[in-house]
Length: 80
Image 1 (cartoon, rainbow, N blue to C red):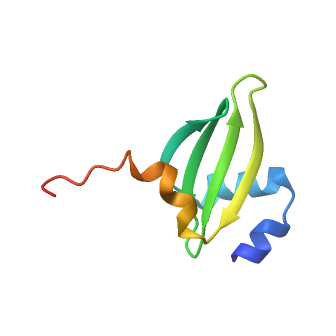
Image 2: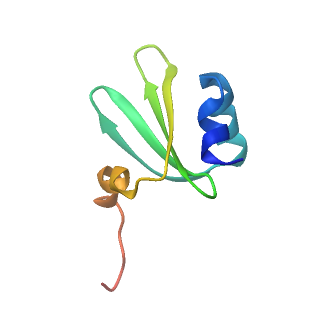
């Protein structure tokens, strides 16, 4: 599945695709949401989970590496 096909899916179908095909890369918190980053092969996906409603509110597929910045501070590279 490529990014265009992924983004054309309904929210529930995007979330299901992430759970089936994605590789978890990291998580962060922002504005009351838990954001989880997944690698999807040729693109990334960020799932926005709302703990208050126990729902996925957004599944954003992207290739822009600047959107990875919130996750970089939690990555540890031993010996560097």
